[in-house]
Every structure is written in C-alpha cells, then in structure tokens.
Length: 443
Image 1 (cartoon, helix red, strand yellow):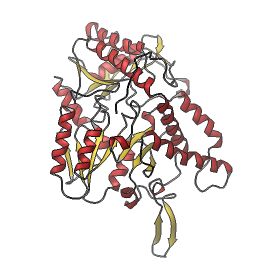
Image 2: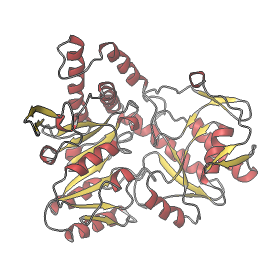
Image 3: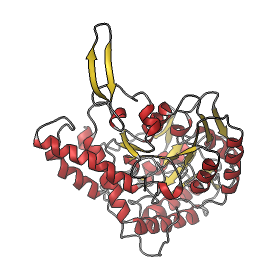
Image 4: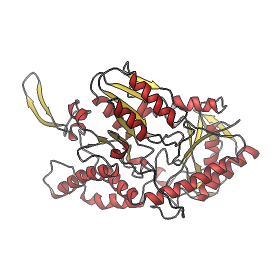
C-alpha cells in the first residue's frame, strides 16, 4: 500500500465538478465553497461527468434487450466489471458484483458466508463493517494502539476462534482518523489460520492504489460516491464460491435463469454469480461512472497522493496552532490519508461545524461518523465530555486556501468567538435569522 511520491505542486490532479461553487454566508457575502468533507462523499470528477453524458443517449435496459442501445448499455455494464477488477488488482477469476455502496456490499457478503462462519473484526470499524456481523460466532477485538498490536491481537483472536470457516473484516483506512491499517500483515495472519479476509476499502480507494493479490485479501468493497462517481453504485469484488452457494441477496428478475409454475409452488433456478446477486434493473449509469472513476484515478495516483499529502501536512500543522486542539488517533505508528478528526476543548463539535459553514463557507463533518464505538472512546481519551468530534477531510477538490481558511476560522472562533448568534434546533446548531437563500432549483 506504499507509493513512491515525488514532491511537487498540487495542481496537476483531475478536476472536480463544483470547484468554483460559491455559497452564501450569514453576513451577506458569498465565498467559494471550501469542501473539507470528502470522506463523507466526494464531488464528481469532470471526466466522470463527461463519461456519463457520453453514455446517456445510448442508455437502455441491459442483458435481455435486442435493441442496439440495449446492446450498447449491456456492453458498457459488463466491461465495467473488468475495469473495476483491474482497479483493485483482483484475480481474473474473482467475481464482481455491483451494489449500491460499501454498506450494501458488506451486507451482501454477510448474507453469503457459510453457516457457523467465525467472524473476527476490530471494534473500531465503521458501522457498515461492524453491524452486519452479529451473533455468537462474531468476535469483536478491541481497537489496538499500533499496527504491530493489531497483528498480534488478530493472531490471538483467530487462534481462539472455532474450527470451521473463518472470515476477518478489516478497514483499509479509518474513516475517523484516516490511519492506514496493516492490511497485508493482517492478511498473512488470516491465511496462516485458514481464514479469509475482506477489505473495507471505502476510505482507501479514493486515496491509494489497491492490489488485492499483493495484499492477500479475498474480498474488496467500496463505493462510487467515495471515488468521485456519486451516481449510486458500489461493488464487491472477490472469491466466487461463497457468493455462488448463497441464496440471492435480492430475489427478482435477473437473479433467475428460469421460473416454472408447479401449481402450488414456483420452481426457481437461480442465476450464477454475479447476476445471482444483482436482481432488478441495474444501475448502468452509476456502474459506468464508477468504472470511469477507477480508470481516471489509476492514471493519476502519483499526483493524487502528492496533492493530498502536501495538504494533509499543511492541515495538521495548522490545526496544532489552534488553542485546545486535540487530534483523534487509533494507531500511533500509522501513515494517514487526508482525514483529520479532532476536538477543541470547551467547544461543541456541532457548533463549530455550523459556524464554519455559516460564517466562512467551509464544509466539515461533525458527529460520530457512523463509528460510534471508537469515536466515543477516542473523544473521551481526548478529554472531552461530548460524544462528537469534527472531521476535516481532503480530496481532489481541496486547495491550500481551503486548508488555510479552516485553520484561520477555527483560531478566530476559539479566541474571539462567533460573529453570529446560534441556537439549537432539533439537536443541531443553526444560525438565528439565517438569511441564506437556497439555489433556484430548490425554490
């Protein structure tokens, strides 16, 4: 998961839609939007939008249409499997199942594991990876303090796991802290114990190249909306046998090869994977966008990583100058992608996020980031009585000015206070007498 980086400028990266978006402030001004919320959902790449526009005139239902447009859409959809397979460095025999997002992919995998499979995962996982696996055969390992400790903890957990099929779930990069987990080392441990390993790559895929074969993982799941293709598609890539043996994730057209009427019952022959788990009319446009994003990112990894690491250093150095700043961290020895979660002593995370938006045109995330267990623990460790933090996340749409604006705004809020008055409404901080108008298409 390492990549040699040559220091350089932060300008030669793929462009995103909305880079020049201007948003209103409560003070009456308008400023260019500083999107520091890429970890939640990334903007659309301009090249992805172009790819979607190119497809739309040809869009039609796939797989069973004789019309020429249907044949074109079918070819687009099926070619996307190979494009995604190459993006994650999967085995040629690995199946590619298109889903809605990472959550959908991991739930599909959870439905497909053999009965009595022992599942081992760290309790620092995002809810998408944490919640599908529940029951007596699931072992949640407390979050380790270092990469080495993670390897040791997994080794012990698998040694104590019941005999039979085993599966390890691990994130590639934490959506809370941005820290890179030692996936290859964990995969070696899993293999030694006869376990398979599934990689939640939702936060890894936009920031680092993935090679499933080199990492030694059996499954990879990620979302289009995290990799600059926000059109509702996700994917699960991996070994076909468990997926082939499982009942269809959804039942309906496409998942069946034949349905027969036997009077008191229907006879059903299910399709083979991947169609077995893709019932209904597929999201051809979303899948095409996801595959296009995969190829665009693959051509620009060196520039992308250099861009993000330069801005990440600038962000962390700047935030350390803010009084009361405390960064959340799980693995003390890990490298990071462009995600920084933090608390500021004496300030509510939701208030900070609201003021940053209303007064400075900055978008960040506040809360527990769908990882309540680990965020609660880390926030408490940071000395806060709240159960929430602020998360600033960098991506291809981020500039040095965005980072500097965030740091300056936080310093001003902490040392001088807000310019506006805020109140709580339905559990959220909102500016009083908010005169900002919505865009015309929402009028």
